[in-house]
Amino acid sequence: MKSFTRTLIAVGTTSVVSIAILFAIFGSPLAEAQPTAAEPQVTKQPIQPDGPAGTKPPPVTQPDKNAPGPGPGESGATRRPPPDPAMNQSTSSTNTGGPANPAVPAAPAAGAPQRTWYEELAYRPIMEDGTFWMPKAVNIEADDSDRMFYAVLGLSAFFFFAITGAVIFFVIKYRHRPGHKAQPSAAHNDALEVTWTVIPTIICVFLFYYGWRTYVRIVTPPNKAVEVQLLAWRWNWNFTHFNGVEDSDLHVPVNRPVRLVMTSKDVLHAFYAPVMRVKQDIIPRRYTYAWFMPTKPGTYRLTCAEYCGTDHSQMGKTADGRRAVVVVHKEGDYERYLADKQALDGGGDPVEHGKRLYEKKGCTACHSIDGSARVGPSFKGTFGTEQAMADGSKVTVDENYIRESLLTPNAKTRAGYPAGAMPAFEGQLKERDIEGLIAYIKSLK
Ligand code: CUA
Image (cartoon, rainbow, N blue to C red; front, side, top):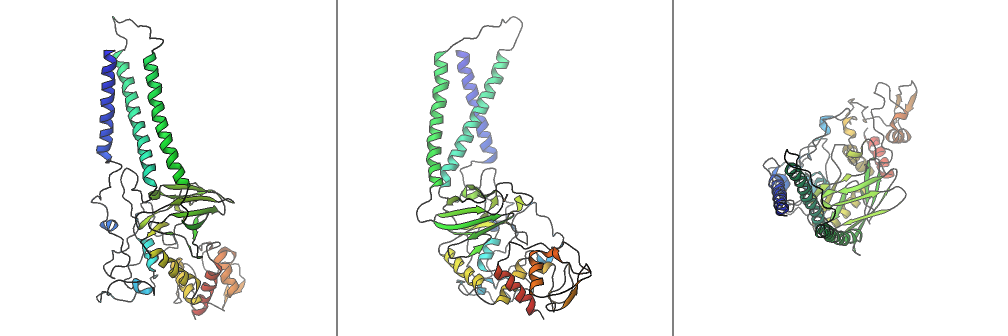
């Protein structure tokens, strides 16, 4: 019995030391992560989208270690442009909050896509602390599940080291040696058996109770949640807000519960926002739900967590290589976003709308508007002309031809240009977008 006690002490000490080493190396999971020297300071700045022009941190390319350089048909010129200081003045209802810096030129660089204030937010660097542990939760309901996770992880680590330690200890202590005879083991030990039944039972009941309580909260959204529809398909997200505004990034207000009503056009996908600790499958022909309540404004990762084909890991990637994000707006900005985006998408000049799409969807990379040929033909003066196709036929560039070239570009290929170079925009453009692009190309005389 004395050796049993000694074993227990040895095993306990080993376990505690092992866990202490884990914490020493990786830090405590529940502590606020400290910025490391390598991290760009810009990610630590408080969110001030409306700060005086010129004092904003420059939009830095999101950390994306796997991002390739400009690929075929994607020239360097279409990548992230320099920050546009005039951005804050571009939207009528932006309250810029301070005088514009006179030293900053007001005109954007020629050809650079002009982003709205809410697009600027989506293009900010991801605001997640990178440590060994999970990024700090931004969902009010996530603390309980985090505690559960770390409790189970801690228990598993403890028993892993305790059991392994005991096995090693006994193997050495009772190894076969000359002069020692093997002894029959006891068939029964009531005290021991009661102990190893009761203690794990108590632990399991606690885990069950807290797990169940947390689960019930996670699946039950509060009554007055902001509802957002999510339609997923290979390989895009489309969020629709209550006023009809659609976006490929998820914009939500801070400190208000958000409920997602989700379905898929094709295969299984899963909505996963790591800082929200929300991961929910999205199923074709059925609605699934998720909810969270963001506690801190910022720009966070949004990924697909169900393998859905070739571009699963790139789901929602924009033409210029940015990943889809969750933008948590500070107080009042969500309403501003809904109003501004609705004004921009829903009304206005179709030519302007087409021009914006031409810049935003990456058309600039292959199609010039000054008559020079790039990977594809220039848009300048092309409308209404008759053009030779690769198969020898002749086609007039009219509304039907442009529409077909947008949706199924490989149906006809212009003579002298590579076949299959143009991506199909089927399913990515709304009717209004197609009308806008046609109007824009028409306007380029
Ligand atoms: Cu969508 Cu994986």
